[in-house]
Image (cartoon, rainbow over all chains, first blue to last red; front, side, top):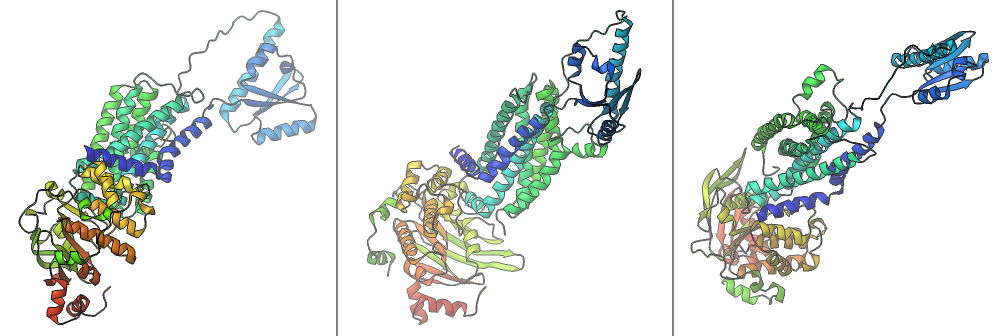
Length: 358
Length: 272
């Protein structure tokens, strides 16, 4: 027990005193969360811009109430009716700076829109059409025959932070595990600490247990910090019912990634080689596992590859329990799979294991 | 001339390094047979026969040196004796117990200093020795005492990579001795040290041996072997060429020094 505690302390101190390691495994993923969280925060429909050339009666006489409602959807830039202004406005639409030009010829309101973005042009056409119809209706002096009553339904679509948090946390856990085990193994082999431990009355389980323990504590601390920051009102993560299931998931994920690190560390002879090898494994895995963006739109072959990656399953299960109200049913199979993965890779690593660099 | 006579001729130890502070006599179980018996050890790496039939016996309390040019098989012999590698043939017994397969009960009774300074990264001198002490179930107080013995108390808060060569070697020795082993293996403990640091380390080794410990070391240095060792084994090409007390061996061969004998036995051609 004392051997386990003191080896854990030695590992933790060695890690925390290595500024580069602290930055890359602890702070770097957190920076990604804060940055991505801020960048993708307001990913709703952007305002459309309409250039009004000269007087357009339906727009100019729009009631204040309608104008206020439109403000979220539409910006109207008014210019004079000259031919130059009209040319300029059309140029803007061509270059994508504006979504449409509106002008009036007698009783006809003319809309010129860009063909580039069909969703945009649809929005602009719809909005303008409704303005014209309302004006028509007002012109009859009759009350409207039909009225549209609308109330907002609570927004339950998944906000980016809801998938960014589990995705980036999974990536962080993967980095911590793979680098932790790989660097530890290579550097202890190079510094001959492995041999020194072999010649001390210490059980292998104390050494391995210390590594696993240090990584678990690190991963849990990271999970706590991630969830705290993402839950800040600014980022607005909403945790769902059994979010705490993410903890056993993180633990199983840590074991799986430690086993990848063991394999890398058994294979690599130098720290540089271990670093390169670990990066080559982690970065593509993170991209293919939906750590940075959802995989829903990805082509089928990408999803087929990602199905064999442990990180993909970890991220999916974490998203389920953190953001989608998932429960044991989502977490348990993934936990089992991760543990199996860890067992197979550890067995493989033990075949490749060497005490010294020679 | 016996070891005790030679020790008697040495200058007195500074108080911090007196033998008494190195060990607490009577704590470890003492065993009666030889400290080491090795019979016909062989180890081959690919094409190289690194160790080719080494047999040796080291008495309890003896200071034993293994000499040889580069590539003579000294380090591999040590590794086979320690139980770090499995011999292809033959077997080694330490304190009456086979060193292969690994036996934690035996490991508790032996101390090892490896050639390179095997330290945990970015830990201070005190943290290093306390970590090693914990591996053997030794108290932190005893670890700090050991640091004092090797004169590193002032450097206790210094990180492993900021220690000088001599300080690192002393720390490494302290880590090997912290659990008061009966038998210590040292692999080239004074390589790369300046004369002051070397003398300082010799004093430590001598006092450690004077406390009743069996010490086995490999070295390139003839004066180190002559000064410290009761007996030396001269090795080359994986074999033991001759064993005996350094001066007596030289006299017997009719040469002036151990170095002359060494060159006579191993030849003058350039190695590595």
